[in-house]
Image (cartoon, rainbow, N blue to C red):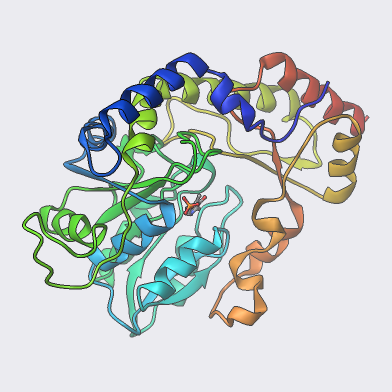
Length: 366
Ligand SMILES: *Cc1c(COP(=O)(O)O)cnc(C)c1O
């Protein structure tokens, strides 16, 4: 069997006819920028998330950047993030004039609340937890820390559309939440795309302006914005795929259950928590990140057997980009960076393929 880490052509192949029809229909209307497909998608996604406003934007990084601006981030203020996140989290802060400050992570990949407390300073304005791998952080504790220190929360929920913590969806814990529609994300489009969720009318008004050159509906500009719009054609594709989103998530959770039941007894592997319908977290498994000693050997063995794996962020936690000189607290993240490995996880996989991956891993450990 050949199982690439992610099979990009399958995105189109899965529903080729439906996608072709959408392309023809939207293009025939000449509906390319800020048209009905975009506002329909925004409305339907808002219903799915259960929030007042969803604003489609160019990509997840723009979503993070505009969310921080909407939360009132000022030049020189610090924003606390996790070491185990995409560089875009830090870059969005930098671009909005802030200073990224890096906290440690926990064994389930979420940000460590204790470490957040260690990193708070006079300059801290915002906590920006990454809801990584499709799993929410310990949001009660983070909320408590934010309240106690009068800090705002802005979420990097780019990997967690539909994940919940105590029945609240990722993206709704702070001023605003961001999502990415990069092709390999749980809800992927045919290029770049992103969205912001917020319950604040004020934040929504500002983001709507900023994504469209700072213009209000009359065309008046009160402050400089950017071109950060989500293409209408991508929105039409996303609107179609949103109808099947719960099925994609169910499939991912089914795959996670299979990995868990087959591999959980291997002492040398630390698995993500099993999908759980009763606990505080409902995870959507954007990624299936395991931790193993001697990662390179397992990676190579799996590759020899036709199985693609990936090391998230190329193996660098944020604090390990030495040239960026970021203030950080990172004991666990340092260790985890040597052990983390992503197994194939997407709704296009068959259960037979997942069984094959598990069998090879079981063989490897004898
Ligand atoms: C995908 C992702 C983003 C945003 O990525 P874009 O490519 O800009 O859409 C941000 N943060 C995390 C954690 C991500 O995984």
